[in-house]
Image 1: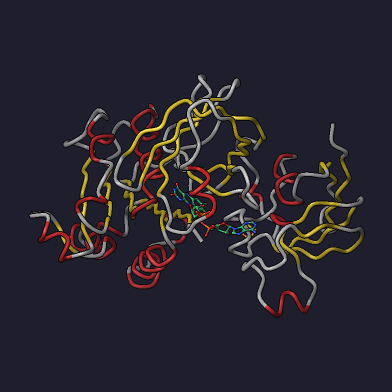
Image 2: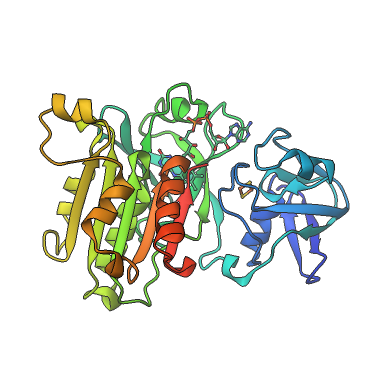
Length: 342
Ligand SMILES: Cc1cc2nc3c(=O)[nH]c(=O)nc-3n(C[C@H](O)[C@H](O)[C@H](O)COP(=O)(O)OP(=O)(O)OC[C@H]3O[C@@H](n4cnc5c(N)ncnc54)[C@H](O)[C@@H]3O)c2cc1C
Ligand code: FES
């Protein structure tokens, strides 16, 4: 059994145990504390803290989540530090909205199914011995053989008693994590840690849900769609599902959405291709352009103000969507839920 140290939060006095192989952030979330975070993989800087007492080991010194000023001030990332002794920490932000609804846990998942969705996107299904407890739209961390640090991947399914954790993952050229992942065989077991993430389906609203996904951002949007259909209190809620891909060979998701009750009536699928040349070469007759532009073209501005938004994908897409929703259309922040794939 691994040794545990005690971490005390300076502002609140809260104390929690942190195993020597766990991070200061994740152990705090496991204990039910509202420590701030987004990506969990060193990219965003939302988990910054100051070490007041004690000693930690930094798993990734060069993590881009810290800027030179942070480093100068001795700030650290909660998602990249494991304790070497009991510690007192001062997180930059603490907020109840970060308190996990389902506490994250670590388990060994067995890969039970692999399915190609496109030339470079695959569905991976892992199985745990315990029920899978997470909200639609959340993500987990996958520890891959021979790869430094875990990788974050969003679940595409919803909570279930069978212990199924399903992911839709795009192979990134030159990427260490996806190279290892795409080499896994059915029957292999890896460590999985989750759930994490705040871009989960809000079930207490009757607003039209708008999902905006691009490329590898399909998984969490599909999970939101599946969650909405399964949620008894949301049976009257409409869903507009926008999905952007480069060319015809990159497009996926329609078959999975078509399998949902209400497809074509309350569920609308609106795909677009961003590569006009590839679209023409593939004799594509649908929408061409960036997916956020299509959202605006498809829904009148006054209606957009009244929708609930979920969006996931590469940072460049998230920035464009946020600029449009927050900057241009002034949609209130509490109605936009997003995960940027850092
Ligand atoms: C919240 C979230 C959800 C995501 N969901 C999906 C999804 O559903 N589908 C999908 O295809 N992609 C998803 N991604 C992107 C995914 O996590 C990877 O970034 C992507 O697959 C590329 O990984 P790679 O290892 O192949 O590339 P690499 O370039 O090797 O690795 C990039 C990632 O690894 C981290 N990293 C790099 N070096 C280190 C190190 N030394 N120590 C620790 N961490 C390191 C970086 O922060 C970055 O996240 C998600 C990302 C985030 C943040
Ligand atoms: S949550 Fe730690 S850097 Fe993003």
